[in-house]
Length: 301
Image (cartoon, rainbow, N blue to C red):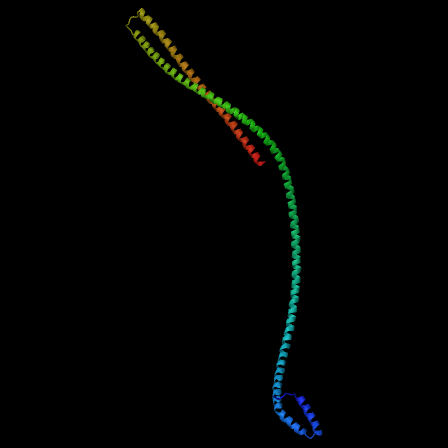
């Protein structure tokens, strides 16, 4: 393949060959040979150069368009940079304002927090002082309650002893009450027997009195002669009638007296039972109240 040369090199070669033709008669042949050998190469080079020129023209056009686009893009970028710079300045201004506003809010919040902390500290100090006073008061109350508890313990022991004594006395009183009730029952039975016997005696006396009254009426009938024996019988009848009336009156008085004694005895027994029951109830109530006070005092302590 033929070696490719540039147009400048080819011109130099022609100039050199023309200089040699003056001194050497064979230059024309050499030139002819060179032209013949390079004719094809020149055509190819011309074609190639035309293509390159066309490509360069296209490239120049493209570069011109590219330069225009780049210039336009550069202008747009400059405007964009200016816009971004303005936005950046606005953002920096807003950021600075936000920072200042945040600092202001922070200072206000910090000042408010300091005021709240101061108020809270003052409240806590007052509360601590109040609790200390309450603690001192509770200590005094503890001493007082302890003293009261000791007194209540002593009172409880005294009331317990008194309750035991009262229980013993109540048991004795109950024994006495049972004995009295037994005696009362016996007295009632005896009174009932005596009452029945007295009723029988009164009935007998009443019958005898009726009999004597009939006898007296019979003796006082008109037309009947009054003999000495009749007079004696009449006197005896009158005497017996007076005795019977006196006996009936006496028995009624004794019956009334026994009834009054029975009622009085029942009243005494009832009063004694109520009095002892009231004393026992009061003692138990006081003991229960004392025990409750001691329990409450112990729980508070």
